[in-house]
Image (cartoon, rainbow, N blue to C red; front, side, top):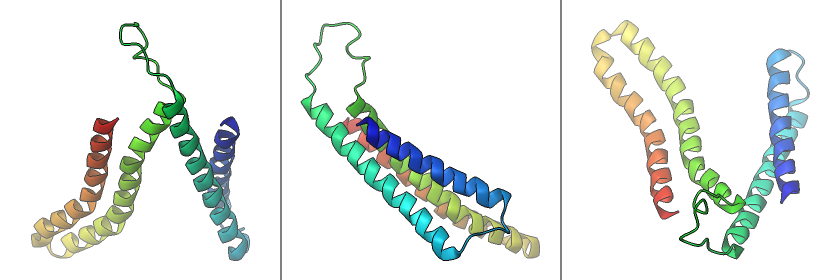
Length: 150
């Protein structure tokens, strides 16, 4: 189990390092083919390691003995599997918030351009902004529903 977590950590650290390197030296880009293959390889390794960690975590939760109801402190203990389940419950909110942020960028800039030319279009631009932000709300609702099942 720990080797999967280490593999995920190395994948994330590599992706962060590539991002920092590209931010600091944008003119010294490698060949696009190499860059795309490296980022895609990191995504694949991270996805496979995440899937393996979640699968092994589910097996650990199913194999764990139920805690005694009368023992104090047993309810406060969180196993590795339950912790991974909580991370999995938070993922829809995180991914939906990232998607909403990506959607709000172009919508917001276009809304500002329209409002600068025609101030009477302010109401319509708010509707478009609300539609883009609704994606994050749907992710939050999914996380709350899954948390109720835990």
